[in-house]
Amino acid sequence: MAGSQGNSMLGSLGKLTELRQRIFFVIGALVVFRLGSFVPVPGVNPEAMTNFVNQQGGLLGMFNMFSGGALSRLSVFALGVMPYISASIVVQMMGAVVPSMQALKKEGEAGQRTLTMYTRIGTVGLAAFQAFGIAVALQKQHAPDGTALVYFQGGGFVLSAVVGLTAGAMFLMWLGEQMTERGVGNGISLLIFAGIVAGLPSAVMHTLTMSQNGELSTLRMFMVIAVVLAVTAFVVFMEKAQRRITVNYARRGGGRQGYQNQTSHLPLKINMSGVIPPIFASSLLMFPATVANFMGAGDRSHWLTILTTTLSPGEPLHEFMYGALILIFAFFYTAIVFNSQETADNLKRSGALIPGIRPGRSTAQYIDGVMTRLTTVGAIYLVLVCLVPTFLQNAWHVPFYFGGTSLLIVVVVVMDFTAQVQAHLVSHQYENLLKKANLRRS
Image (cartoon, rainbow, N blue to C red; front, side, top):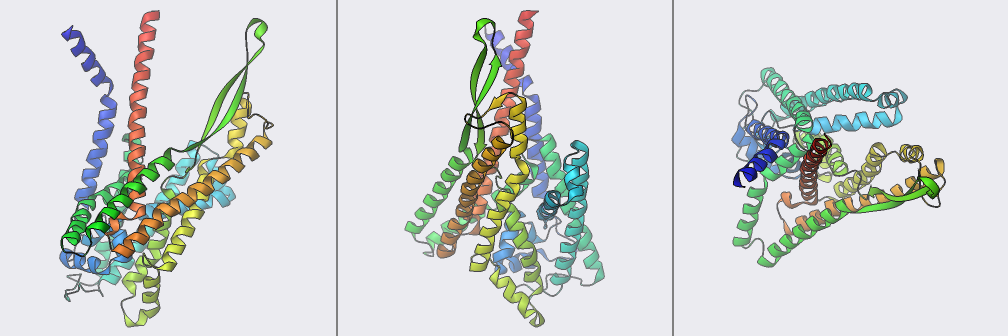
């Protein structure tokens, strides 16, 4: 009896070998990501760079959060995955408006490989441009104590910084793609998740220190905890929320039964775009503002200093543009990942229809109307989650890691990772049932 139980346990563990390998690969990739974030670009003073970023805060603090603290040390991973995300935005936008790019999207896997190549080329260009701007600007900057951020200025430093930062961005792009293919979940989202989570312990300790020093009252600290828990519960509820459209399937029955109607549902998520709109919006806002932040310290760049100030988190213009971009990208990305006409055609081919709606074009229009209303609700939900905690954070001076965007990314990525693991477990159980059924038949 005990031997049979041991054999069954070993058998179940053997069936989960692939899942274990995928999880270990993700863990290993995240370890590499964290180790790389401590490798500085040659010629940079890491301590002076950390003091400079901490003093600036604002956009640099936000960029530093997404890079997992790599920017504060100017490591080879300082650019993070933002160049790749920006290039993806451009390629996806062109794929929606340029006829030749639309044709590539319809070519299936071959067309997708071409679009991926375009995205990689764009990533190299954007990473090199950002690296060059940062390297040139750093030579003019000093830490709060007057220490220069760069040991040796000149063309040699600029060249090494451009090569190092660009290579780091390309490596993270490759690592994210490998995590998606050979791991569990979306690799790029997991890298951003790891960067945010890496700063959570220090943010918690900073908040506790503020409470002990009297800078943050006990009541406000408990209110912050309540807001974090409420936002987390709200995100989980909205991410699981669905609109189920009733669908009838007419199937031929045997004998005198004629046609038998079978009822099913077409599930449509309220937030079809996930965390992509906030990430896209943050990427677009951080790119020009970060360049302005580095270049705006001189007296000749007074207008850049004004631009940096107005685009800093917490400023009215930044919050307005951030919310507007989230709304735009929510509709844009939903239109990319969900095609109502294609869904209607699939229903028609499978002999399914929505009660009261004619198959074909009418069904597509009905589904499109439902998706428009759902996306409106989902976009408003994203704006509220990303902005409301930020308003509280600015009023109470809580660390940026408790902002709505970071909470949204952490919760959604964890939910997606858990769902992927459960899907692998279900698939293994299904394969086991099929094998047992085949053995019994034989």
